[in-house]
Amino acid sequence: MAISGNVRFQLRPAAADDLVAINGIYNHYVLHSTCTYQTVPSTLAEREDWFAQHGPEHPVIVAEQGAEVIGWASLSRFHPREAYRHTVEDSVYVRHDVQRKGVGAAMLAEVVRLAGEFGHHTVLGGISADQEASIALHAKLGFTKVSHLREVGFKFGRWLDVVWMQRMLRGLVEG
Image (tube, rainbow, N blue to C red; front, side, top):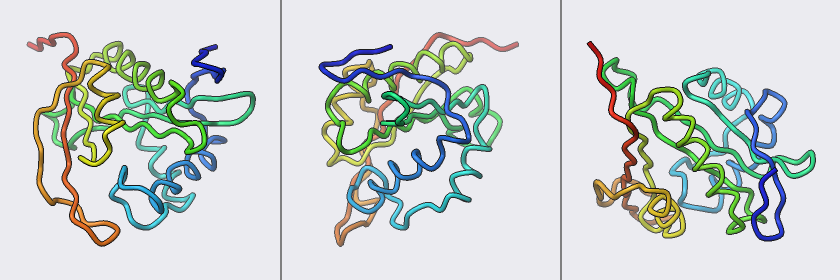
């Protein structure tokens, strides 16, 4: 059980039964935020396909308060080409009514820990440059800014920049 401020929650692996809640949390941001550049809400079938693409080395976790999912985080393949197999991209989404209570930090710390446990070499986060809280959260957890791409997204009638942040894990040597 994690406790942050007055919010008590636990982190656990996501299950298929969590996908409705995961999709609801994500779709709120599709419609109301630049933290995702997706512009049309995901269907449950799309979320099921997304979940099927994750597995032991690319986990999805949830933050649960009582029986309610209040956030989710994942590690996804960064790129399908084989040489990128030790690089993952994180995603962290907290239900809009429980933001800034430590849930996101706990989930990001956990997926970074899992990335190291599964032998990944680096974790990347692609963040809209106007999402200062997400940039600060990643920096707090040891990520450094490695690029700033100008006007690569267009949402809500304006051009958006993306900041890429990176956290190196342990060295990996393959023979």
